[in-house]
Image 1 (cartoon, rainbow, N blue to C red):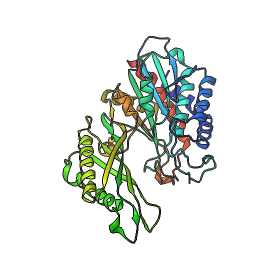
Image 2 (image 1 turned 90 degrees about the vertical axis):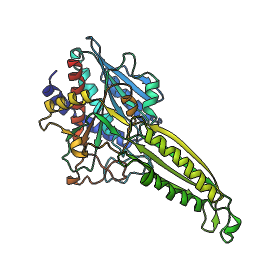
Image 3 (image 1 turned 135 degrees about the vertical axis):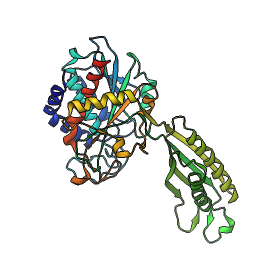
Length: 403
């Protein structure tokens, strides 16, 4: 099974993949609530000759190969969308208000379905087993650990894992394949929620109240000192307050003020994250107390940093250069070797088995794709779907053949 054959097979089903992607785009679903999406993917896998297995709360797994002895490689696509209103000017816009495939997971799902179809038609040639995973709830960092807990890495045991992500709004030509180098690739992420409790009252007599907004504002400003004064300049550690809420009327002091945000670090053992959390709790509680308020700090939905296996990275770079005429780009040439600040819940897999990640440019900023992931106006160039399908399939068969 050579690269030209796989690339040709992928090119032949490009229109089918585009139809799949646009159907999924019209029907976005979030978290684990993927009734339409899971049913649609399951039907496609069955059509291609698979017997998909429901795994975890909303995931699907399908097996290909296994007729020849060998190792097992996992190919993964995430299926969930984001809870945002779509503003992109496309004729296949979301038909569900408040939900949108703004991160490209519809692209990933279509690509992996394409790879599944290609691989099934050549199943007798596979040296080992390809485990094909369709995962829910990536955006809330719960889908991957749920599927790991449900056995996605076992029976047979996974020896290597690969994911693909698309990117729009980059100053690179659409279809460019970038390969992550070994080491930490993306940051860890953990959500936080700070609640400041005061005593509400009339806006005309603030001295009779305990104002939680004032306390929360001072907490927000004080937390910035963690970055500027307490973290080693050689370390990466950042937190962002993305949501701040208090009150419902202009003339009323509320009982409480709340902040939500994220903490991100790139150290494997999360020592920087532990320091940030410890100091956040101390600062929030003590600053709140200085303003006569009580403060609660909650941390949740942790996702570790993703670690790319160096040997697997070298292998996949070689495979991409074999199959694509324009080759592939080492992602470090773009990032300067720095890990990405975004987070990805496939990181949980990377702490269990050797893992690899590809990023495919799906919309160049030079061609009008000016918005990036998670923006309500982001558009993805679905003419690159066959590239992802070929990249998935060829990486799997080449790695299994070599190992």
